[in-house]
Image (tube, rainbow, N blue to C red):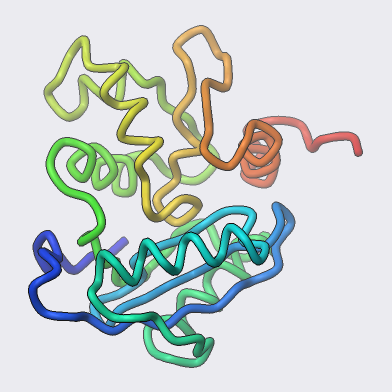
Length: 190
């Protein structure tokens, strides 16, 4: 996974973003991208959630995002996410705009994106050790909760050391569905 690093965004110079909502097996996902790459993925993007997410994004970027599913690199992100849910993609090869997160959470998420492949899971503590923070499992959990790019940066692959699912911003059913899609768990019986 590739990823531009345009800094912290700082809000000084307004940056334009485009967005779209994609219907998926886990419900509507809002995808937003700047010229630097995919910047935000939001679960359960019905009207109310979408409105709040776009307001937050506008405040962070200093410009109101526009709805444009064909804007580059959003069109490629949309295509790759559709391929993932159709079972035809295991790795995302998108430019990522990391400007919505910084510090330790960004470091952990970048390690997760590059070191934990499709169809595998990692414990919170193990991921903390991988980034040089033994004993930092709780901080890793907070970083997962702050992930602005879920699914693409696969926080659903981080589980408890005893095999429990742990928490998940999109809800545990969403986490189960994503892990089942990747063959880690049996498919849910609906």
